[in-house]
Length: 109
Image 1 (tube, helix red, strand yellow):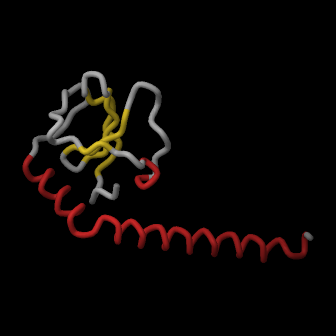
Image 2 (image 1 turned 180 degrees about the vertical axis):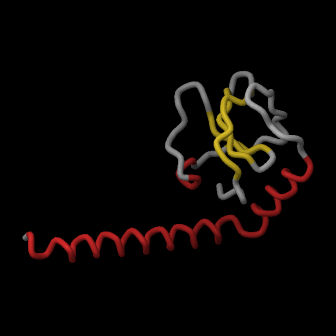
Image 3 (image 1 turned 60 degrees about the vertical axis):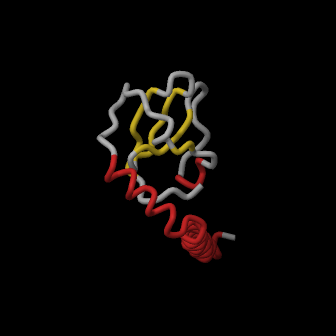
């Protein structure tokens, strides 16, 4: 068993690398040019978003599949969304920004 451990680590590393490449290809095909163009248009047209700001629902893209962005389910009482090219966590009751997580290149869900 111990003799085969380096092979096991190599197999796991190779599987992880192939899975990440496959996932990246899948999200690129799923988003296409429309997702990238939408994020670019939102970034160009809107002002910077800050924590505590109320978000206009017309500018908010609600995230339905957070796993595509490397996120788990949001904490209770909050949701994830994209505004002006930024991945945010917001309060769905009053649509206020609770945190700005990072910039995103395209919408994939």
